[in-house]
Amino acid sequence: MKVLLDTCSFLWIILDAPELSNDARTLFADPSNEVYLSAVSSWEIALKYALERLPLPEPPQKFVPAQRKKHRISSLPIKEEEALYLTRLPSYHKDPFDRLLICQSIVHGLVLLTPDEAILQYPVRTAW
Image 1 (cartoon, one colour):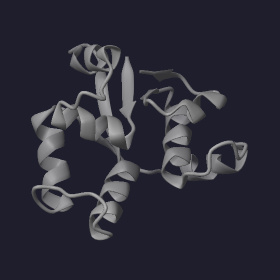
Image 2: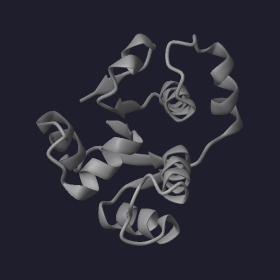
Image 3: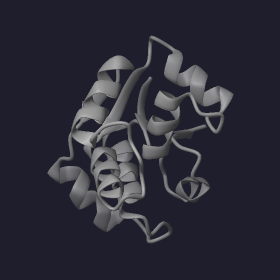
Image 4: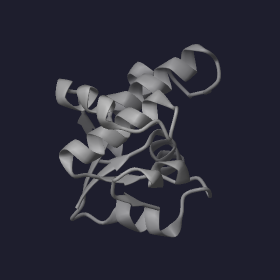
């Protein structure tokens, strides 16, 4: 299975946070799954860090790649097709980061690992 982590899922996985569900832990730990972190999440992390709303032990340009490598998470770039898919989404969810993650999941047939119930309104496969 190909799994796309939303931003909080990525952070909770690398921190081994209690907010991470058992199903999410199992899905992430399954070596047969391909796990991705979108450039969208890296952008969100960098933005929140710059606004001092997300403390990190080191700057995001070091932290994110190091954690992806440590946890065997591949990077997923943002492509034009995904950005343009935004015009096809109803406005159920206002968060621009989540909306682009939804588009990437739909375009690439990925399972989005997220606790965000608002995302369930879209035709995207999710797990939590």
